[in-house]
Image (tube, rainbow, N blue to C red):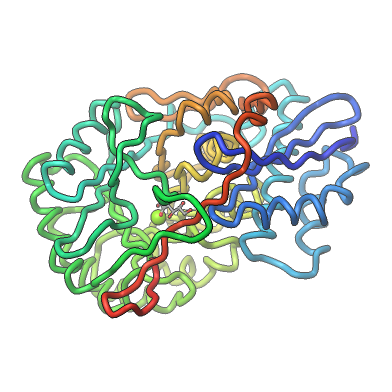
Length: 413
Ligand code: KDG
Ligand code: MG
């Protein structure tokens, strides 16, 4: 069984997605997600110009060898563009292998280890009443764990805090989709003041705990915006509110920063949505500096590579917390769900439901009920790609926002 065709598909059913479709000479089709938010066409070009011609004629069963061929063979290793492209190939090959075996993909990964994946939803509000309403809405949708993001007095719109109604989800729901409201040639600019944020956030978690009680798992994303000592301060200040995790407190490149944070707080830490390989985690695992791994299948070289990361994490009792925003396509999310149901060290899965247009394009068959995600039971990933719908939704440039301090200095977001 050899790869006979490799197509790179770009569509925008409400946001941009890059999908790789591999077809074998005996007619099996596999899909892989290669979406890199705001840099989508770089991965599409990497696949089209450099990988698709290499794939034709390869044995579609040789997933590991193909991974090594693309990773080592490229010489220029790692990085989000390369690893998203390799991820798409890897995921599509797993999809094909599972279809050939006539099994849902998770069965090839060792079978089911749990009844379902605990998922967390996204709640946010500029002010407390909106935030409470948003948490109630999540609970009404069945979520049993909620990420809480808040506006900060004196600052305008903030990344992660819903500012506008999203027509596609209906019901007056406000949500943000990690794409700025303003699409187009330049990113939206936001303003940031760390001192104001650090003063405000603990008061919000105190209020939320008073309103919703001690049981509900609460998460928070600091989005790389803090220095090590600021992050330590935040972790300590949030300890009374018993967070499930505090995410991306510092820019991930400086792994040593996490030592300082750990010295000062027992708030659990999650990191890794911008990591691309096992090597990015090495000291964080070996020194036990984090509690949850945030990598997505899509940005970390696929199922083959992410499973290896989780196995390494398991040695240190570190669990999965896979990135699942709407810029990971239903193909990438389906792959994460198959992997998550099989691994021994599952922690939680982010699930930020896709729009109706996105569902029409991919027809994902994973399910969400009572706060739990479950993979499709049909052979493969359980996701399709509808070319007609894709044609009706061509690519549109869209960027993530950028973040500046009040004096105009560029800052992390
Ligand atoms: O593309 C970037 C987003 O996926 C990311 O900012 C979302 O931080 C995020 C999260 O935790 O889902
Ligand atoms: Mg995040």
